[in-house]
Image (cartoon, rainbow over all chains, first blue to last red; front, top):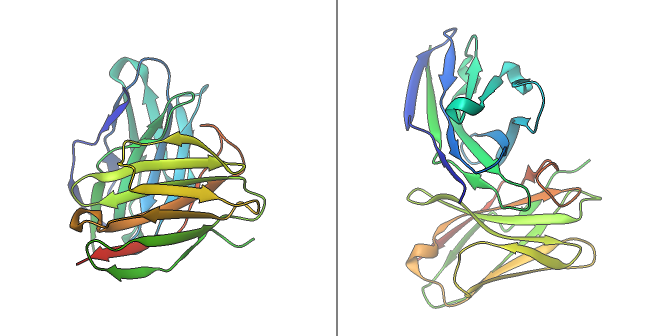
Length: 112
Length: 114
């Protein structure tokens, strides 16, 4: 069965600092991987996705993620965080013919 | 192009009642999925509809049901509400069925069961 873990429940960074949110997945084959962001009172917005090919994927709002098969990881990064990035971030996995499985989420706080 | 809309946005029901939530997908999208989001369980998949047929179903009791109409609008129904059904219910639409199709989420319906 698919599963996703996000080890960090809550992360606080200063504005302008770099960010890395961790995501580990469990799936028998190469999965489809996603990162979503949810602002308070809002639905989820797709930041980026990985299906195949280049293991470093670029997304919206300056985010990128790297797929590492050997570590079953798909960590999200941003070189310089803005106050508007404060939100909850969800990593998700979906296998072929399978449903989406979301991680528990990481809440990001940004200090001015 | 208008996004996914969900109605109502907020709902308060009493235990034992039933509730129907509505989702209008992005124009042209034929797939609609429903999710339940709670602080304790996180985001959990409920079901997916494509062209009026249920394609996938999550691990929820039969009290949770849904349907999709010919215009791709979808409804989900929860009967005999329990306190634990209090949650944010999210709907997502996509242009096709399958993992490679991007899902666009609505703002959700916040259901409170008292």
